[in-house]
Amino acid sequence: MKSKVDNELIEDISVEFSPVGEVNDEELKTDYLEELNDVVTWSTDWTVGTLINQLEEGNIDLHPKFQRRDAWNQIKKSRLIESLIYGLPIPQIVLAEDKKKRGRFIVVDGKQRLLTLQKFCKEPKNDTQDILVLKGLRNDVLNGLSYKDLEGKFPEFYKSFINQSIRSVIIKNWPSDNFLYTIFFRLNTGSLSLSPQELRRALKPGPFMDFVDDFSVESKEIREILKLSEPDYRMRDIELVIRYYAFRNFVTSYKGDYKLFLDNTCEVFNKEWSKKEQVVKEQAEELNSVIRLCSDIFGKDHVFRRWKGNKYESRMNRAVFDIIVYYFSVSRNRSIFLKNKKSIKENFNDYCMNDSRFIKSISSNTNNLIETATRFVLWGKALQKFDNTIAIPSNLNTYFKSIRNT
Image (cartoon, rainbow, N blue to C red):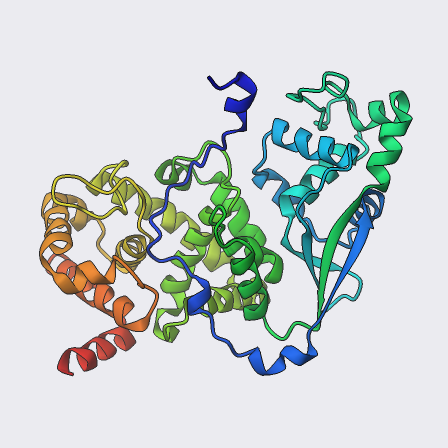
């Protein structure tokens, strides 16, 4: 029988996404392979004290917003600190040196471990500030201790903790973002599937990314469709919002490289934020409105999910999200969808069961140009029956016709 402590260790994964539409290692371009000789990788045994100093100096980028996407509960954090106090081995940390700022690092793997160190060791600015106090440990001596308590009451434990080494791998002269994405995916192979949005957040900082981060947290509509009580620590809510902005603004430039498509969207809006800020904020409100419309038509528990004949899948489908949100966004007459919501829902369900092309386009390997064009064209034509103002993206329509003819 599991104890209360063991039950608390079970992570609550609120966001349930179908694997459909995920970017993976196999889909990344290997444009960096010829430049691997220039990559410098070295390992160092940084002590806990050194890592704390690096964090305090801002040399390891843990953006403040990362802290609200903290995945670990207090017991799991406490066990990491306990392991360090007693000199038990923990997994290595992987950092990439920032190309723009020498001596500063991007976290490729180990964010939760670093967040735990930061929260435990950071000096509280006031009495009400939340700090990590050890709990749930089978060693009652450590339970209830803060960092200051450890230093004052148990100097030997404190000394052991501060001087404990953590293997840290440093990557320098990395040739491209794809290189880091590849390392990121391979480090997490066989473990809990992580979203590459965590790495994108570090690689593409800027005002647009900050806005999307805030919006995804504050949007009631996003929280409801993802069933989130707090921000998703794998940042998949952010990725979903960026998908919307990418197709809403740059669909005609999509060429089948999904990661690059999202990366470029972030870069453009970050760079042109002063010109695009108002549009971005208006489109954020548009997204909220469209999600409400979608939920009204399909139902909150069924929206953006594939119909399986007798019920909808339990997990959200990114490919379905893309096409429904896109067309409802560009429509000039959204009220007509509400008037015909039964027919629209029946049309969607029929496609999910009887059109083999559509089924394939929302089921697997959906990030390539063939499947993207297929689902956009087929669903666009279905909606044109209700709203003739809808235009199917010309590049996808042209490509779909070419593959249909062959």
